Length: 518
Image 1 (cartoon, rainbow, N blue to C red):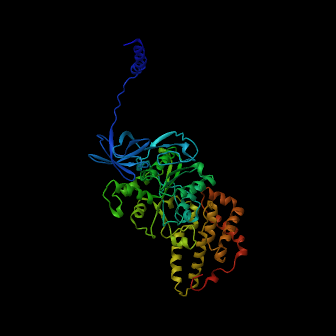
Image 2 (image 1 turned 60 degrees about the horizontal axis):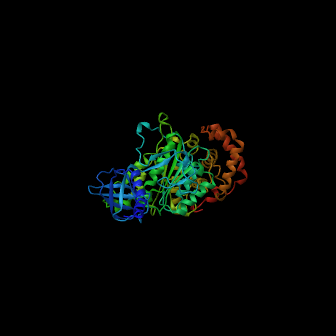
Image 3 (image 1 turned 90 degrees about the vertical axis):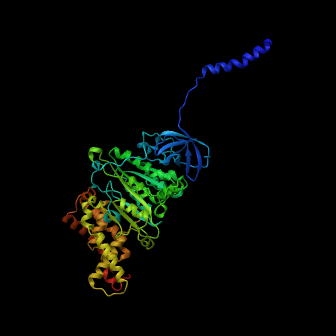
């Protein structure tokens, strides 16, 4: 071998020898499996010798999944993202952790997905901490009674079906009847209450979610709201975990002693996403093809809403789940499940919606089983029997359509009932304070509007509320602070409002005689 060859050999091998000397092999132990089949949002893997239920597994490239169905040989995985990149034979790795999301004040004003990843253009999310999406509900001994009201700013809700902090109040009705509008108006009404809001959109159209976000931004409410979105275009797995992730975000604020409002919009689509996943994982179907644990899926979610005792922070989590009915069938599977889980329901009637009675709340089918104890005393003084009176009026109005002759008392009840119905009308986005609501309800139930034509009731209502604010400032201030309505206060308010309505009277109940079709 010539000198030139020796030099060339040394120049070629010396860098390799140096690289080998600097390289130290490291042994990595990992639990690996491989994909056997892929479906729409699910994958089946084989090869894990040890795996925990609901454990996260990694498909690589940032795509994760949840070990949902554990078998002796095969595991069904709920994929948290698009499955187009997964192929049979791909490796799957254990992560030894469960799904968690970022929590803390850094999320206020942000829009994130079910895994806590930012969806807005506000930059990187600097989270203070992380929390698992699945957590055990607070035990009974840590819970306090529902005693403080959550004002929605909507007369029909605050007077007839009140909501308290820590309550679970269902909002249900057919599509396009105003369910989301009531939930969003409740969020907007918390501007001065210090309540933190979490809006969780499940299975909604991206355009619908964008409209809600824009409205929150325009009204200045986004800065105290967290939006968790899993649209209908997202994977079923992301739609399934979104409500649990949103609840963990809300619980972090509750642990700080704050009052939190969470809206699930809506759990009907959440149930459908879980049904799709379960059928693809070949779980036995039950009623309406839903899996047998669909009740537990929602009950373990909503049981996390509560009001904690002072010894455990004193915070509260109020839940407003939204579900969609079909053809007004509130006895379907998912609606009856949610009705039995929650503490009451607000039912929106498509018939009322078509008649222009907005919000289209059916007072007779709506109920609040625990909110009445939290209702302010002034509401009970002016609208204690409102639900009973209104239900009787609706039955009487139906009977009157047959053309039956009625006595004077019946005609008076019909006239007052129509005016109470007008008072319960309220435009979307109009949030009334407690004193304004009390004044309007007092005037209606006391008969101040009986002699005013129905078409002028809205104008009379505004004039009555203005008169109460202007002439009874001390009383309205006390009512706003939660004070009771004394007899002297009632007389003073009625006197002030009556004087403001004198020039509007005429054409009252006398103009409504006959068959009640006015």
